[in-house]
Image (cartoon, rainbow, N blue to C red; front, side):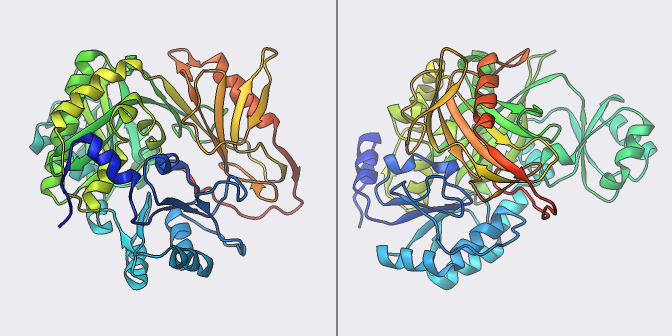
Length: 479
């Protein structure tokens, strides 16, 4: 019988002496980069090696024939089947525990066949909970309300108006279908012409029809444990900046700072997230997830937004906060649950301590995609590591580093390169991620410093046009 871990100090020791091999699989190591600082025997298995073999805990197969991947799930399944990857895991011994952002039923079958333990909630459960309709229903049951809404169907503009009128939502509506990226499955409808524009995407779908509000959005990650739901720090999204993404409404970064929510809003939001988490636990869900909350700027009401039942693109911020270093990163509670460790913590105490520590954290990240509609072969790309802004406005490489945890000031950043020399640069291509201290946006848009980082990184790319460009699809980063 394993020894009970009584409190944070013993949990830290447990992970620092861990002998169980644990692996993060993904296109890159981005989402959980730095967790290897806390967990002995933690490694990253990736397709894109941002360090070209220099990171001691990143493994990528050397033999990579050209494959047209259409999703991160396909990349992860490819890696699981790769002979080099399997040989690497056998050499290190033990029964591998596998974590990843995106997977499917095929992933589960491969892991079962190979004798690996996929330590995530099941694909079937995650798909059900990923529905915006289901999230709304469970939130209502838990006392975590969404923006005033009604659930139903509509096959005409008249029916949509009648559905909205049944809950007094007015005529300016936000309509969502159950699944998919919210930027592509959220429709703003105030007139018949709007209905006609989006009808093909709406008719035949279950709908969440909401009153349109002027809102501020914040994202937060949480972990559902046997002792309750632990809530991480709140951060705002960067969306749709043409310097970073070609997609209108596309996620392109985060700001984590004390004023993301007021003290009152933060308290209400934590309560909503905790209530939803406890309700999800009753559905059989445990471990990591990401939740969006919305604040009505007219009424100051705080509402539940969307649920992403997985590790997310915000994990990079969550695991580097003052709360993480005061205790342990939030993701380690996910590992405790799936490693079936016998441990005891006071969730209420942790939530209160992390809420207070939120007053000292300021971090930001830029998700940098290729915004131009062209296809070129990359000849040179900025290196992964630490970069520094100089007094003349330039951006210079300061040295190789393994992650962003040692970044200390606003003029210093960590850049993780995705596409390397020999890869293609195309509309939507994932060029890399930049993480730094300080904020990247204000109410007026991107800060001057963030633009210096964007221009500085892009200036280090050199590429050449192709006479007959191939068909390519971006796959690496989704919030």
